[in-house]
Length: 210
Image 1 (cartoon, rainbow, N blue to C red):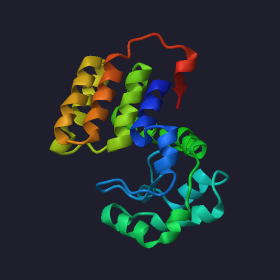
Image 2: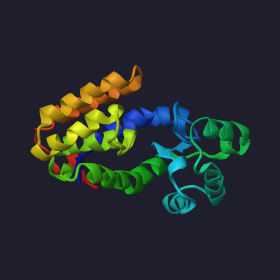
Image 3: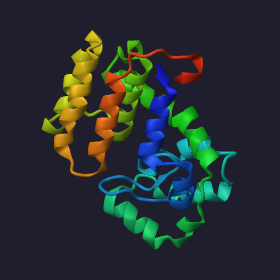
Image 4: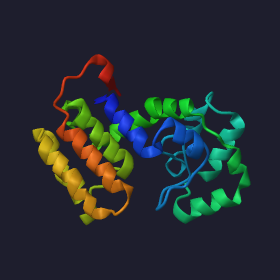
C-alpha cells in the first residue's frame, strides 16, 4: 500500500510529538492511559507482541539485555502493565534510540498495520497516498474492531473506501470525535484534513510503498 510521508509524519507526531520530545520523554518504557500495555519506541505495545516478535524486531538495535527486559511485559495491559513497570525498577534500564524506534516503525510496525488496514478496508490501497495513510493512522491507534456503537464510524468507512468518497471518509473521522474529550479529538481532525486534502500532486520523495 502506497502512503504519503506526510501520513508517516502525522503518525510519528501523534505517538511521540517529535524527535526532541521523544528523546526527553519516551526513550524508556511507558504505559499510556487506558488499556495500553508497556510501550516503547513509536507506539510499540509489548502487550500485543510475542517473545519472538520482540527478538526479531529489536535484535541488533538494542542490547540482548534490554530485549530480555522487554519480554517481562508481554501480555500485560492497563493497570497490570502500570504496576509491573513501577515494580520492576530494571525497566528504567531500557532506552530506545530514536533511530531504532523509527527503523522498527517503518520496517515492522507499519507493514503489520497496513495488513490490518487491508483486512477491514480491502481496497484502501487504491486510495490517494494521504488518505490511505490516514486510515493507517486510524487503525494504528484504534485497531480493527468494527463491532458496537463505539465503532460505527469505522464500519461506515468501509463502503466509502470502495467508492473513494474522500469527503465522506473525512466526515466519519470527524464524527468519531464524539468518543473522546482528549488529544484523540485533535488526532481525528488532523486525519480528516489529511483525507480531504489528499488530491494533490505527489512526487516520488513524498510517498513510501509499505
